[in-house]
Amino acid sequence: MNGKENKISEPTPEQLLKILDIGMQTMRSKRGAQNTRNTIRVVSILLMLLILGGALAVLMYLLDDLREQRAGGRNPAPELGIEKVSQ
Image 1 (tube, rainbow, N blue to C red):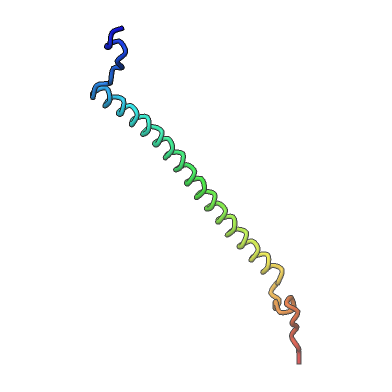
Image 2: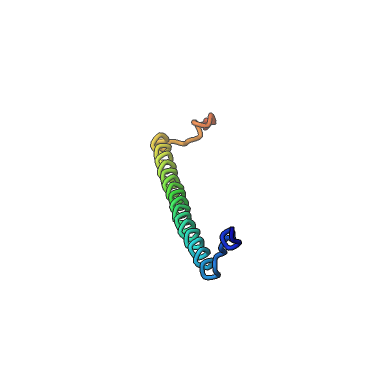
């Protein structure tokens, strides 16, 4: 057997640069897709919080309006168990 047959050929510097470049491109493409996914998640959560805040504001408005209708212009003190004493 010849010594040259058993020798493993090492890549040239140009080949190493190509391999590293391909690896970096792969990492960038994965990272770009991940950033897009994270952005979609954050926007979705913010949108849900905005909708919940709006729903809470509408609910508070409706409950306040309902309370005013139930009072009917009366003094709300009797509802608290405190009655006015008429003299």
